[in-house]
Amino acid sequence: STYGSMAVDNGTLYTSDYDGNLSAHDVSDGSLKWIRNTGVEEGSPAVKHGIVYVASEGTDPFLWALDAETGETIWTYSSDEVYGGYVGLSVTEDTVYAQSCGDAMYAVDAQTGDEQWVREGIGCAYDISEPTVVGNIVYATRYNAETLGLNRETGETVHTITNPAGCKFGAPIPYRGMLLMADRYCSGELSAYGGVEYPRFTPLVVEEDVESTFNISKEYRDEPIDNASVS
Image (tube, rainbow, N blue to C red):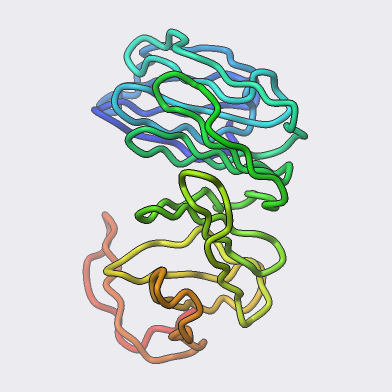
């Protein structure tokens, strides 16, 4: 079993387990391609350009980069600032961003594992709060109802979005110049914020019990549902 999420790339499913194993499976039949023990027990793998990354604080090294086809180690990364807990990953063309539950975010070269910067005082990435990269900004959610927009090159704060409901946001989703946000553990509200130019744009809040239309598409049903409740 696993605490983290899975990742799929090029016909292969990657998942970690409580024994510290990272495994690769053929998505067509579930057969095992390879398995490696990294010691990472709570990791959510991320895959980019033939490299699979996985991380979890409390292990040393806490960030691993493995060949996606063979499972062989490409590089590992350790840090003195690691405290313990879940680590959320986001990978761009050249950088791995790792937000820890030990109050820090790390930027590491995706090809070499060289440290680019470390930003402390971020807050915990626990619970679907992986970093989100939009242009030159990497977003990190915090438990104090703030989402920090950090400069991708330096880790310095560019702007802060504060949830008016006073709740922690989940990871923001970029869409057509907006950031779509959802509350965690609180009101369940959905909101949309403007981009970097308007970081505190008044949110467009979807209240509970609003009449709407959804399309539920699953293997047993594909039909519109009228007057559904937002929850």
